[in-house]
Length: 194
Image (tube, rainbow, N blue to C red; front, side, top):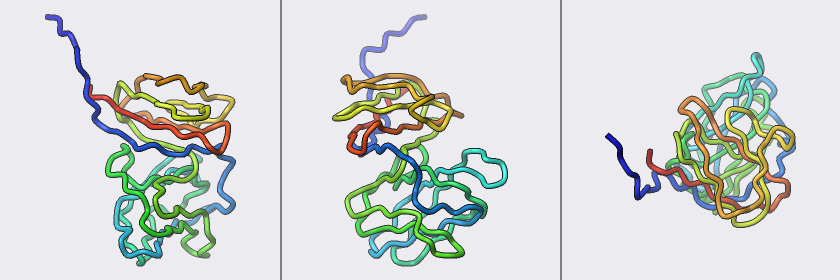
């Protein structure tokens, strides 16, 4: 039996975001937890942190629920380098922009890693995990590099020059990572229904 797919519907639409030419945050946990706190009690959504493990070097992520002006600490205690922060879950759902300024800092020293300001929902590189097939990258401006299953760099990434969209698949155990060749690239990710 054959089926014809005439219409596909978006399952996940990640709002337009700025993708940066990421060279690393100025301060990194280096074997510590990450603590998250906002200056607004209204910042109570999900937050997913992507980074490397201090012992194994493996890519890992953790999703926490923010509690506004009360600090939240990650369960993971041995973060090495933080690559990406998304105010939503690891699949790119439940994205909510910051209401205030959200600060990400080392758990034991309170050294600031980065901040996300009001109206913004991501910092650093961009990552989402195993969302399935039919992923589209829509470019509003700029040029980006993307990779599936590897932390993207300008060397190993696939170049996307801003054509209307790029469509590809991500396995359920893979992840998508994106960086830009400049600091002002605006793009949008759409995941279609399987």
